[in-house]
Length: 288
Image (tube, rainbow, N blue to C red; front, side, top):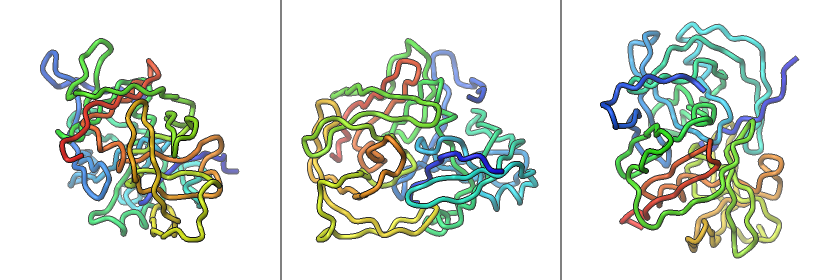
């Protein structure tokens, strides 16, 4: 019998080796394109690098089912997987010896059919680096330098600038969530989702959907999601006219939606500090 597990794939605590010089944090590069964070992953099991996405909204790291089969990974117990308005069956697998610039990635993965996501992107997606990689660490995403850094407690924030906003970060058993306000309302709990290419997905009945536009999204399923514009408050920073996908039903129980890269990338750096329970947003980017 499969055991339910809620894993998000939108639109679309492993050990690590420090190979950087003393005082320089370990990390790896990414390419920010199509609204997603693309990472080249190396493994002796593949002659070519694999394409992974950094997806903090996925509760566990994922390997594409087709890639798992190509690499000869054994598939074990089935798992029920929930995404935005869809569900599917995945399989637990392990044994992938993968690194990104010498940083070891989780070797216990969930094998899922990512074909719809791959077809929506310019390159195939071999897997997702999920929240299980982030939890227990201080992980900084530098959108300007296109680099992920693994910081240590006491390190200065690399790439930080003004303004610097600190939001609460709840690192539960399954998710990474913060609190933001929408349209002047009280702060609500949103999943911080670097696997979401859009700025915001919001669960609300306060906005009429009849006259909204729609946008097709492809993740685990192809969906037409009503679109509107909202005002979003992140700490003391207010963003107006934020493109927002509108949902009548909760995407995940107890959560008001997803805050994605379309909003996160407006900052120079986004830092997950799960030990201290804080999400740090530093320096508005010049283009904003």
